[in-house]
Image (cartoon, helix red, strand yellow):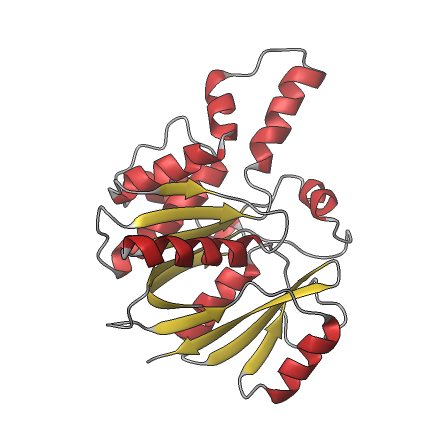
Length: 267
């Protein structure tokens, strides 16, 4: 399966570098009331994409994440279990994944298919598969947003993801606009539905003429990986590779099962 990348955008790092809520209000003139940090991050990445490319109202939208809006779950847990209070209405609404998708779609003026989906494993790659299947029928273009927000304190998200306490984590949002057609594309992404064994992956990597990068979960592969962990690093790798005008084979891993995506720059 292959999708062509028409545009990319994203942000990765600590929020001390930028006041996202202020950026949305002042620069983009968006209403940020009743929204939280996870939604703000998702909308911010979408606005960055809007600056790079034309957004058509009939573009499909897909938002995915490693663990979703875990901050709001912590907040409501404190209300109910610790403070013995009722959940605030807007906190309950923001717990729903489709709430984030709604705000992103509204900020981009999208009127078509709008989906928030998280997979237990390989969430970003599974979203690519969903997009390919949908576009094969609709013949439209699609936008994917991958959002990972660190909890405060970030030990919580490390426990949820099963990470060692010493592993640094970070906030990340990455967007791509995809099409089945190569016209004006800046890159292409190849992927499949197959799950590979470690030996199969090693054989593939031996024959690869592309650079190789792996997620932090690939502990048995000694290749380049990010210094900070975030679940949807595969999405960030697409953007980074295309910005650098390179070709890359990216490997992700869960429970000794492996999946790969191949990223090719067309610039």
